[in-house]
Length: 69
Image (cartoon, rainbow, N blue to C red; front, side, top):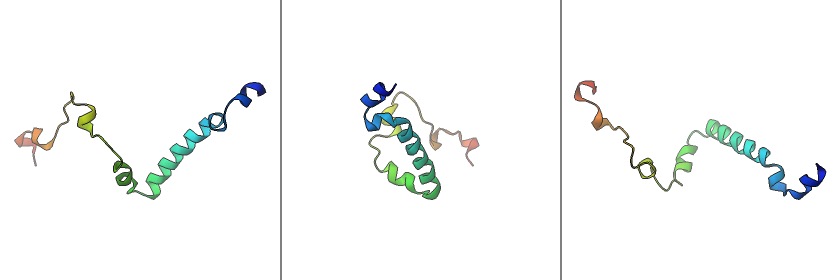
């Protein structure tokens, strides 16, 4: 066991810790800084339609006139 852990790098050895730290940072970041989603979304390159052009996303124009209100 000791021989196999010495072969791993520092980042690889604590990968689970890094993953849980990133998840906690995201949860607490969203809680304490509610506007952080605007900052993160500024780095977005493509939109929903670019990723899934074969799917249809309903808009307000798709709602029948009787249901608009």
